[in-house]
Length: 504
Ligand code: SAH
Image 1: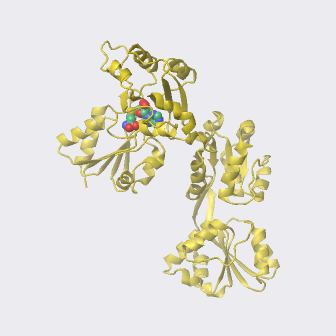
Image 2: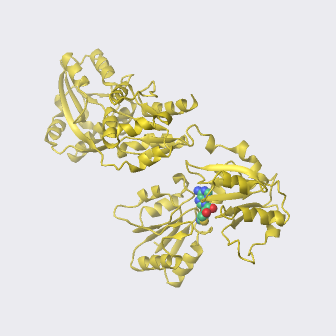
Image 3: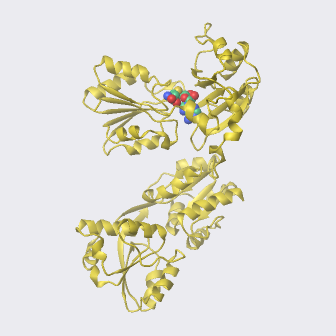
């Protein structure tokens, strides 16, 4: 292994880091990172890895560059493998070259993991191919950070103006009026299209297209600020035709996901894929049951049951953890009929080699009861591994129908200790458009963490989505009607319903 890895983290969309970059993050001892690098990457690091933020926000450097270099050298010399994570590509205006020189001088080994640079990625996400045969033979990456009061510009403005290159300026928004006037002064046509892309590739991306003559005023009026790239050239004409990212159904919409952290990812991913901004606000913490003697007993005595009914993904997971702990596997379920309350629970079983005998068409306890009755559950022993706190409909109805029901708590849900300040701020600033609830407990817990009054005040701009009628009923107990309720009580249907609500 090398001592230090200079890794490009890409422009912001977490999918745009390279596989090599991720691989290294997973093994590094220390991660030294910047302001622009998306923090989500830190989740890749191995347990116990150290994180050092050396940020850079505009001119405000958390650590001066020489101190950053020194820090990296010291960490590496102490024997640690250092991942130096930088926004975009480490060698494109990232001072990665200087860091690498220091490493060589200190006798340390290093590897560079190139990244997707903002000038390429933000342009592409705004619908602009930076080269195109019809428009330009070349492209230039230029720093826009030069002090405009400096008498001698180190830029050759005439060369830029006459090159026919697409010009991509980094760090240039503040100097935009100067950049535009220097290019026009050097003979560039004032009608040349210019695009600005702010926070490119992220769900809060903003873009605009104007002309060299008008762009400075328009950017000021629309309050464009850093981090933005400026693209000058004919290719910007294609932005409207080739836009794709900003056309996604949930683009620019903020969605709160209230599920437990371990379960949030499926819904969060669907929302992100549709262009939405996810605010994960876990209201539920999930953990193993403390007293697991009954669980152990049931697992060891599985042969005595006729039916196993799983009502959640977590039920399957925690039940299987216990099987594994006791050196058992799917064969322990041989001869037992298995039911799953919905497709996600069924998938979790399939992953473990069990094809459920019954999955109801409607994913609520009431439907599972009808289905099981049809399958002759009367007089049979039914085991329901589930959360300690859950609705009693299923066991009660099955018992009424003559089944011998045993409830087996395999996990507990408690109130998550989540700080609501980020959500409250985002609500206040109008960045949140949807609130999603995927179970009654997410509703109850949400309102333990957030005062219903806060939601009532923002109700005009906010749509509330509930996965099904039971959750919606719980919500109405707090004085709110659900605006969105999918026909199918599933996560994909819920995500889809958000896009329809947006169009409607
Ligand atoms: N090494 C980085 C650039 C660092 S300089 C890279 O290769 O992308 C910082 C400048 O990059 C910002 O001022 C802005 O001009 C640009 N930039 C970085 N991320 C951006 C993004 N997501 N959208 C638009 N511009 C971005």
